[in-house]
Image (cartoon, rainbow, N blue to C red; front, side, top):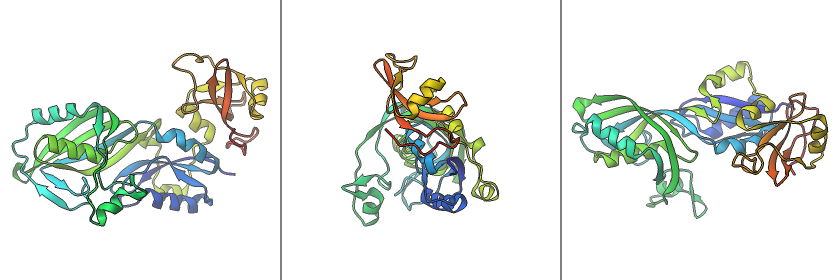
Length: 310
């Protein structure tokens, strides 16, 4: 059974679900999932798992992301991006480069971010965006996120300076809304703001250089085999033949070299364990002097096997 990751360069106008549907047809299987959505307006890296590789997606969702984006100052929209109606305009002609730098600095590092109300977050079982579209006013709670990097590359003044477009790169923790950053930067500068372009260039270890368009994938379905995908995603542990046998049956083995330290493998952040052949055998968590399997893949199958989680 074909299993692995596919790194897609999502086209503009497609939902993440649209891309999953297309991949199901290309791969000839219903078992396809994604590791974190992209808004229809956005393009770039969307990581898909096929068949048994869907079991790796949980560990990809929480990784850091990198984006290139354009923020427009001087206009606010209902969605905080270019897909929504403009709700307010204020001239940004008086906004200086120093003011922009200060606003960006204030939004860098650990921050509390209120997600866009037009988002997929559920409120009492219903998507926030559905409540907003029905006319309800939705106020979401702030959540902690980390902006590792917020770099300004260009400042372009348009329409006589009435609006200002800022080209940026943002590296951030999982759960960050780039359009909320645009909104908050505009609010802090007193002129409003929204996102006009967004491209995701990296998800964890997977980059835009690895991504292929749907047209390219229709011609040749490039799949990152599970062992290679896990090697770049997690700490690695090389097993002996005896350890491979024990783990393949779901039994414990001795703890890894990081046991008892902050580098210890955990159920949330496991180590990828490989047989002497290089095949992915299991995901391991350290517990005391032992390492126990979080997820076991059957031996003898280079695509991840048919083992059961333990």
